[in-house]
Amino acid sequence: MTTASPPGRLGQSSQVLAIDQLRLTAVVNVGVKVALVACFAVAIGLEPDSVEGKAMGFRAPLFLAPAVLIPLLARRRDWEPYPHTADALASAPFLLDTLGNLLGFYDSYPVTDDVLHALNWVLLVGAYHAFRFRNVSYRSDAVLLGYGFGAIAIVWWEAMEWAVSEDGWGGAGGLSLTYGDTVGDLVLSSTGGLVGSILGLALLGPGVRS
Image (cartoon, rainbow, N blue to C red; front, side, top):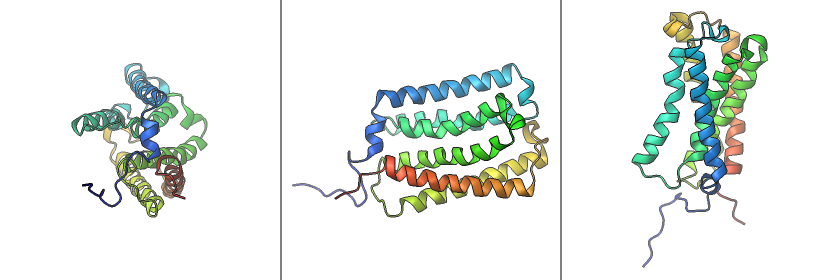
């Protein structure tokens, strides 16, 4: 006697499960995390001029949290295969942001902030779908769910930046944020989230049945 799978549950048809089993995916995941830790080691240990007033000590535990929490959660819940795709995509935005500060791109090239707000939300929403499609096969609402996740994430990110800028928590009181900056970031990140949601469905979700 066979038991029907619960509606929306997904077997091996998910593309992300196959990607998670690739050795290359595991190597990329480890590389992203090693690079992120190395960037903070340089930023906090050597304190180059490019990160002055950027509150790298305040950022470190927040930015490194996904790199630590995801492996712990995966081990506790015995996820197989290991979610290398989601893990790497969740840490990649923090690596790019940290590199942008460490290399002085934000100061030398003002467009860096706009580019990374869009790109990082593509990656972040990709991470959302990489987790979601390990268990769920619904396609019809996937794009809107990912878009909504990205929109909520940027609202809270901007709220945190405002709090840091106004109150100077962690030494970041020198952040020069304006109303125009905030609105622009909301639009760019939510748009990046929409793109990431479309790509996440196409590249990580279940294949379209003929």
